[in-house]
Image (cartoon, rainbow over all chains, first blue to last red; front, side, top):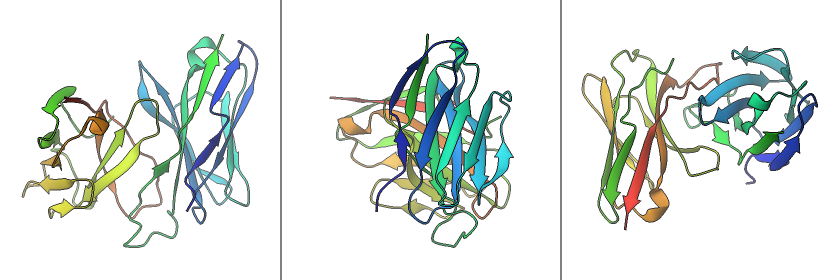
Length: 118
Length: 112
């Protein structure tokens, strides 16, 4: 079974630009979560989507947005990029919503997209 | 804020057992203890989880104290590939909320 796939793996942008990152979850998983990882703040939760609806949101400004498609694939968008947005962006999928004793709410992470803002 | 406390770093000799402690004194009755690890520049990887009984899988063992206020992750025969940051997390297993609050974790160095 294929894992969580994130594209692109690396991205370089300049301040003021916008960027879109993509995440394909494990087949059958309906929940997709996004995290930002920086050396200073560590791993921080951005938002979670389930059945095309945002179900949970972290403490990030409105420049950070996302969406989920009917096939559970998700995209994350950051507008008006700032230097501080340079980070590793991680996507995770889980089977939540159909939770079973076997599944037990385990999240599976992709390799991430490393964004550098110059 | 994270509900767990872990030492910032630990060393372990290759081939020895690595024992990683975690304190979670405010854990609720329906919260499980999960462990993930993150090898440099990769996404976190699920290792193991448990409620109150000790658990073992092909990667590790998890020992949870009787009062559930602390736990220990055991890597029985550490290798250089086990060098990573290990995160201990408490959360409800059957929940509609998939949000994980990560702490700073323990950076484990396996020494050759």
